[in-house]
Length: 159
Image 1: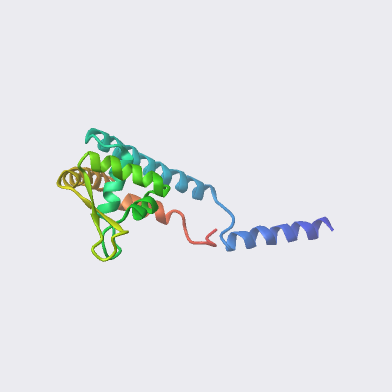
Image 2: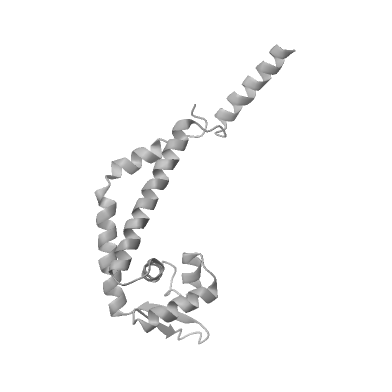
């Protein structure tokens, strides 16, 4: 009977590995390294934003407005979604950016209830400077390192 239980347990472990539910030590190491790389980049980016006189959230809002891809300019709701914040928090953030003359609100000519956001010249300049620094930092880490890191996760079912 003990032999049967041991065989059954072995089948369960083998099956779990095949379906990708069993984690290997190398998976944990790869995840830890990946998260470290993300945190390192975010720390760099946040420090660069502060040097430009922006909070990291303000920088992200400018990037979200400039990088918005849906047809038509970004709205406050789009910024809230991009930053994973509540709409009223995005309104306050945009108010502060507007006072700093980094963004402007433009009424939608087709729907006066809708307001579009546009970067002001000063906002464009700050975002461009920060984006250049961020891209330089990303290029500093060889793409092969990130590629190796992602490949180290392996395919589901690899044992």
